[in-house]
Length: 181
Image (cartoon, rainbow, N blue to C red):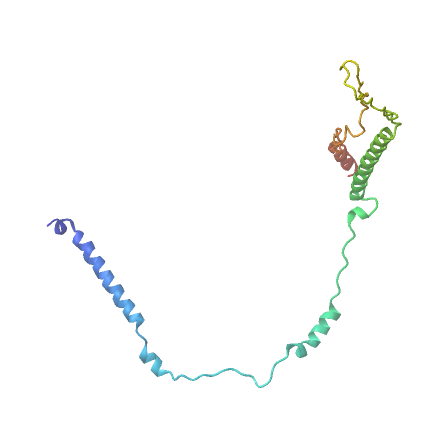
């Protein structure tokens, strides 16, 4: 009774009708169309030309005309290569700053090389170690003094000094560029 009173039976009936209609349409689409196929005879044809057409033979005059009518335009010279331009001045200032950094690095390298090449203290001569007598002697009778240790040349190997970062003053570069404009 509730199905009739609320109208839910209508939704169930419409759903069943849609399912039936869908099944009928699928079955109809699955059947071959005999009438349409029988009306048109099956004839296999292929499009074959009697000769091969060679595009290269027929396009030669066009290609020749294109070769004669078009010449490439030369590219403009880069501004930084033209003397007296702002770009040339900016590139010159960048090159000068790089040369200054290289000169400073070279001077620092030569200074450190001069420090390393400074005369090194003479090596400590080796002394023969006293050989213990074959007769067992009291411990206080035989004493060997240790040789003083010389500083090793390799003690500082791998230790890095504070490296110059090579950063340039951006404000100064921008000031030069503005002044050149």
